[in-house]
Image 1 (cartoon, rainbow, N blue to C red):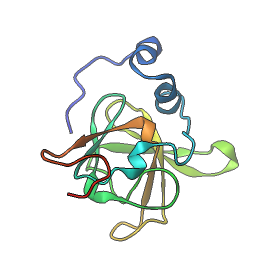
Image 2 (cartoon, helix red, strand yellow):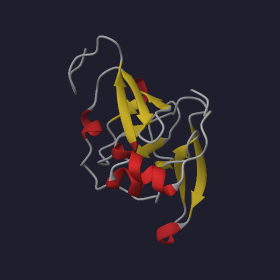
Image 3 (cartoon, one colour):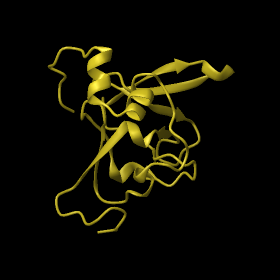
Length: 142
């Protein structure tokens, strides 16, 4: 993971950098509608990154089909994410955010597959994808 060597961005700078939906999710802790992200179908080798700052978050090898409607992973890249308690909507959940820029990514739940038993349920709009060199088109297996 790359170090954050830039000054923190203002709300206005984030608004200029991000799309309105990215801003709503990353900076205002929103949630995209289930099933709307192209990243749900991304199956190539590569790395999922933060749409806000470009930090590497999840290796594609940790992605799995959770049938939740959001891209799901069983583990982040070490040190890439932080968590915080989220008690909104009258429930206790664990929020996941980018360790570099603090952008809201989604939530983690204890109902995932082995080896961790965790499901990092992420908003696709909060992420980008960098295919591994030589990877084929979106969704194709190499």
